[in-house]
Length: 275
Image (cartoon, rainbow, N blue to C red; front, side, top):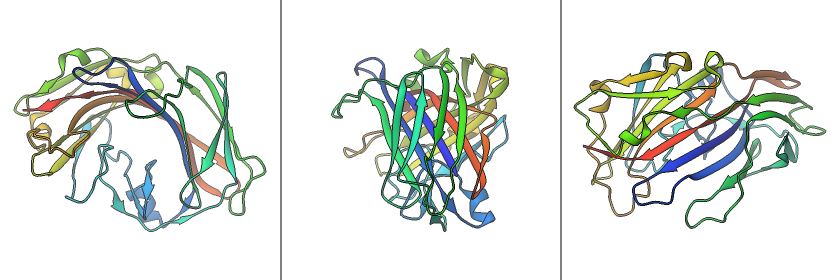
């Protein structure tokens, strides 16, 4: 089971400043150990899931998308056998900004609520997330998962120090990003990139590093695996570069849960062009 609070700032040339999206998700499933290790990410759709970072800190992994895979979260969906677990009618999120229900969506075991957004073409929802303590529970529980409670402290967002340098990214040169973390001893930093070619071919990378290092260099060998950006007319997110923070420790326990985590993922994504 994975509970995630996510907050992302978006920057694009000519776009309004400080576009953001915040949401909370909960996923309760039963699956084989092999499937769990292969994919325990925060997204699932139609029996597929986005894999979480499997590379150790200081390394990168590269994903190749299939032409029919329209996911735009830096990692392709992969087939994973699973069965949803009923954990209750809603999950209850509470913190200093107030209380928010996380409602059941789409299938048993999946919960999602938009906490805030100001993206063009979408309803305006005032930002909810702020640094501080958060709690989550599932009330009286559900048919498959008993009552549980979990808590987490959300630190101030990671600051991507040199984000203004990146509008065009050279694929034939190493790329170094720098950041400042308010919670360096307990935070992992993800550096992610994605590019789409005119043909629709798409690749992405995801690198991990401990926040204490303050920087990470994505090598040319990784960047060159992405196609040059030449977006097709139907593409809404042709290319991006992101730096996000997440906690190193996320686990909690509860009845009916063999493995459970309550985590955040927050940072900044730049719309860029890979040359």
